[in-house]
View 1: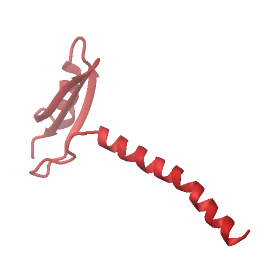
View 2 (view 1 turned 45 degrees about the horizontal axis):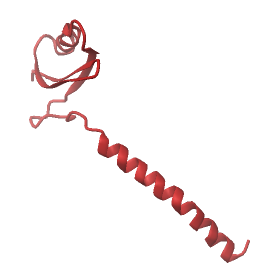
View 3 (view 1 turned 90 degrees about the vertical axis):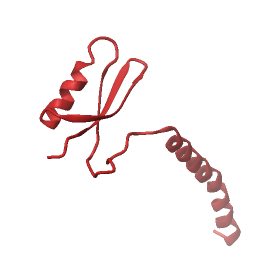
View 4 (view 1 turned 180 degrees about the horizontal axis):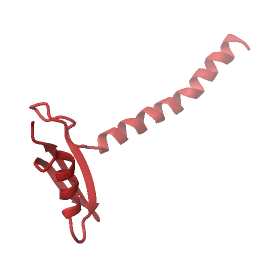
Length: 91
């Protein structure tokens, strides 16, 4: 293959690479998650349960994971899903 042909191949891949980068940037801009760690170093955990009906299953999951006591960092409802973000009390 000639030098001209190989450079033409690189230019054909450029739109694909630019499109892939744009897609990744758009997806990362749309996602906002809870903090992984609080300022005091405690890790956070996110659990989800149905928004309709009893949300106690989220609370039970948090209590079971933390041995009974936890701090609520965030909670939200998105459609039919209730999300609880919590951090266990320091031991």
